[in-house]
Length: 250
Image (cartoon, rainbow, N blue to C red):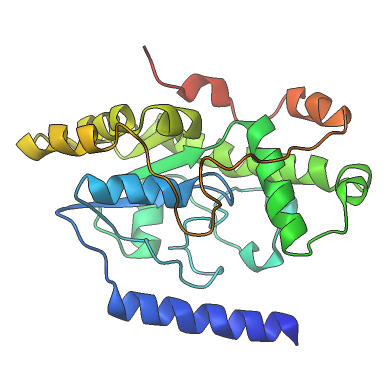
């Protein structure tokens, strides 16, 4: 009953948001990222930069336009939320744009959070939403390993599409976004081919960062991480997504 009530409220809220607060901005863009990767923060930064985030409000989780949609080929690794299970298989961004009914040349920015920080974040989120009872169940029950496998599968597919079509897929590091959002906005501008006088002003306005975004605590609030020593070993295991490639080039 709790799940049904929550789902009904979520659907009603998203419908109201789509009607009352449609995407604004001159420059259309799509953002992507697995849960707790910082996509709401990225969305806020993009909107300050006058971007119209086409998938700003999430549709149903089975909808390919959802920013967390699982495009990876191996669907057996989708365990975090069964509502993301799907039979969609694509070779590249052409098919994603066609399936989602985006313009053929639509560009996508994909945000990832480094695996050690992300596993802490998804643990806190899952604990607050009763996905599991405690750290022992999360770690010793195998969920931490399974979630990291899903993280790698999600981003490995986007990395594959970015390698195939770097003009339409840009992968961004959340650490760069948090430490210098203006510089990340400049990267997005270059990726989009956007040159505008107000761009510098938008980047300057981000110098102090953004204090809080929806579904997140204030950025200044201290967050507790996982304590189990095995977590660092799990994170260090070789995975499909080579995330170290995608940080900011200084």
